[in-house]
Each structure stands twice: as C-alpha cells, then as structure tokens.
Length: 500
Image (cartoon, rainbow, N blue to C red; front, side, top):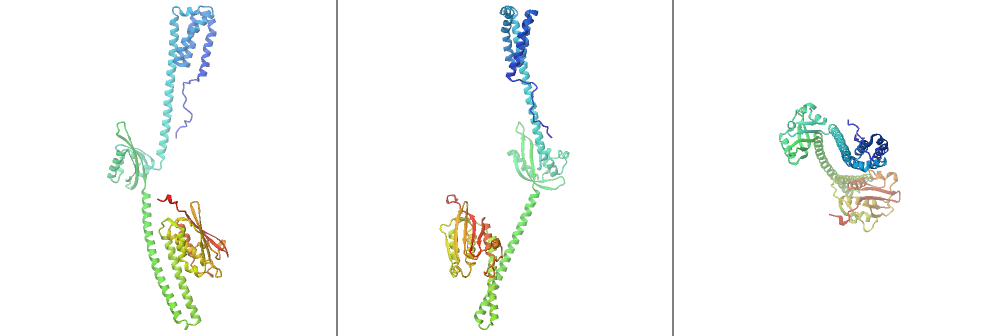
C-alpha cells in the first residue's frame, strides 16, 4: 500500500515573510544602538567591530543585497553614534583603517547573504527533489496496483520478446508461475509463427496495435483465442526498448457466438419447416372445408324438399360450421403473416389507408345501412403500409360488426397530432365493452359475446401485434351499451423538409 503523503513536504530552511523579517531586523539594530554608548566608554573605537552583529543578521534575513545594504548603512550609523557620544564620528570613520573596516563589514554582509541565498536555493531544490520523488513513488504505486489487480492480462516484454513483467491475470491465462514466465519468450506462446511476424510488423510500423487477433497456447498446450493491444517504448535513438500491452481472452465469447449462430440457424430452419407445414396443413384443411361446405350447399339446394326438418337443420349447421372454421383458419394465417412479415416503415397517408379500407368493406357497411364519417386532413404517419391497412380494416370491420341489429352502425374516424406522435381513433355506436373486459378484448381467441356475434377472436389480436411491430400502442375506451373508441398511437411522419 502507498503511504499517506497528503501533508505537503516542508522546507527545512524557513523563509519568513517580509513584514516579519523587517521586525526581526529592527531588533539587532536597536540593541546595537542602545549598547553602543556604554560599550564605547569601555572599549573605545574597537566597539565598531560589533557592527558585524546586525549586519550578519540582516544578511541572513535578506540575502546578498540585504547584507550589502546593511554593511553600507553601518558606516553612517557608526558615524552618528560616535557623534552622539561626543566623538568626531565622521573623522574617525574616514581616518586610516576606517575604510578597511567598513569594507570588511560589507564583505561579511555580502558573504553571509550569499551563503543564505545559496542555502535557500539548495533547500528549495532538495525540497522539490523530495516532492518529485514522493510523487513518482505514488504514481508507481498506483500503476503497480492497477497493473497487478487488472482483470485483463497485462505484460511488458523486451524488444526481443522476453517477459519483464506479467500480472496475475496473464499468469492464469498462460499457466506459468511468476518466476517461470521470466524465462519465456512471447514468441513461444503463438500458435502460428506468422501471426507473431505480422503482429511485430504492425507494431513497428505504427507504434501500436489494437485488438490484434491471435491464437495463444498455454503451458498445458490449450489454445486460446485472444485480442492483443500493444504499444511500444522507444529509446533516444528511436529503437524499440519495450512492448507494453494487454490481452483479452475471447475464447468463451467466440464459442458462445458460434453456438448462438448455430442455434439461430437451427431455429430459422425449424421455423421455416413449421411455416411450410402450417401453410400445407392450412391449405389442405381449407380445401376440405370448401369441399364440405360446397357439397352441403349442393345437397341443400337440390334435395332440401326431400330432407326431413331435422336433417335440413343438421345440414345448415354443417354449412355454418364449415364457414366458421374456414374463417378461423384464414384469421390464423393472417395472424402468422403479421407476426412474420418484414416491417418497412415509411411515410403513409392515413386518409388513403382509410379510403382503401372503406372500399374493401363497402358491401357489409351498405348491408347494415351504416355510415362512416371521416374527418378531413388526416395526418401522415410513419408506418408499414400493409400492416397499417390490416389494422384499419380490422378496426372498421369490428365497428360495423359489433352493433346491435336494431341499430344502424355509425362510425367516426379522426386523428390528431400529439407531439411526435399521431393518435388515430375509430369510434362506433356498438355494444361496448365492460371496463373489466378491455384487456381480454385483445387476447387471442377471446370472444366477449359469442352468443350474439360470430367471430374467431383473432381480429383485435392482429391489430395489437401489427401496431406493436410498427413501434406504436393500441387501446380502447368503451361504455357498455353506447359504443367504443379504439385508439392507435403511431409515430408522426417527419416534415417534408427533413426527408432525405
């Protein structure tokens, strides 16, 4: 673990702020001035040597320039102090030997200041060096932890391929011990030597390579599919010194991918066989139903007078049952086509789809003396034309079909834009649906009122599946006895100027 080095590395030579240094400088000067008179009476002019005391301190506090300035100022200061004690100060300072003494004070102040500046610089350099050393050690510790604890195998090799470093993940992948792998050359782990050659060519040319596919063999001889990402470190002469990289073992991923592809192919083949079987059975079943219904119709038309009332009733039931079963088979085939058909979303005009559906259902609408009112300016939607046509036909057919006999169907179709969507509604005046049965209405083979209305219970299921495949939603708002409003939410078509 790395040591806690959050506190800054402080210098051993403390440099005080300027205000504090000025206060400290004033102390020796004041002491020297106060002590000058009594010491002069005892020692004479020899006391001038004490001027070194404040000069040394000032040089140490302010450096070379501080020492020179203090030495220069000591000359007039001593002259003033000598005058205060009754001596000819300026004359004494100017006589023979006075100049040498003043020069000595200047030199001492300069030397002390120089030593102080040199000490500060050395101390700062040493502090910066220690700080850089600590930062480098922290960085090395962090990267060492990342290297060792990485879940991906990581390595460092020489330019010749000899392993220098390998983390635990790489040791587990290749099956070597930490000491053993140092004697292994990376070239020995390649299954195909040509892969090694191609890999080195890529790295030497570009300086790095990412997700290079290779097959590596472990110590036990097991082959692993891997992706290698590597960069190089070059020397001052540009020659490669080290290879540094990571390895990702994709053996299991590739095996799972191949298994998924195989299962997908098998599933597609099974679905294809099931579709062929379904169409074959449906075709044969419809053929027999049509034959059964046809013969029943001929029998009724040609021999109804010869049949007893009971036999005639049975014959009509056979005809009705064959028709219902044929309709059921057709709805199942339609549902299969909806679930399997490729969905191609494009700009579709709701007005044109509604017009086409109304034309297809014109006969049953006329037979019930119904009316279909369509609001003008129906917007365009993003949908599959075939699936949307099936949705509108089924909703319109139900709106006409599930209306009591004593009531003429009245259908109202409208649509409005809601942000990026279009809400398309088909409102009828039919029998309605109880609130607790609205979810059942969209389930396959659910018939809410089989005694009054014929049907297979697949129509609304087809609507729901088709709408979901177009990325929309469908629902119903209904009041029993008054009618229902089926709504479909689809994506609105992009503005014309956004079309590509």
